[in-house]
Image (cartoon, rainbow, N blue to C red; front, side, top):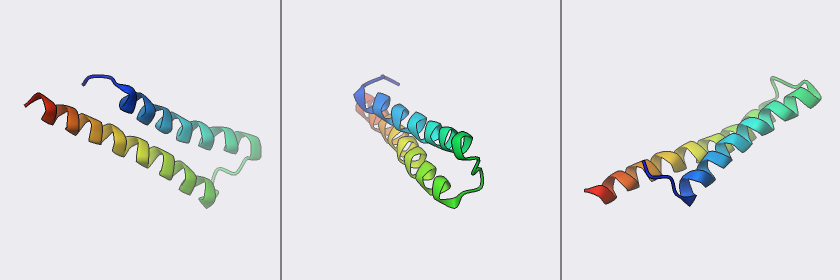
Amino acid sequence: MKINARIILCMLVVIAGIAYYLLWNLKYNAWTDIGIYSVTIFFVGFGVFGLLYSAIKTGKDKV
């Protein structure tokens, strides 16, 4: 898979979601807060979706 700006952005979104979850919970000790889950799932979900989309699009470009 060729690394381009879209893949880097998607990786940063995934990392931001995980970092947000960990840092918020370390600061406030709220490991079972549903609000934090929803924000984390939003970031990680869109990041993973973007990575999959980029991989599929890159694969189709080679054909």
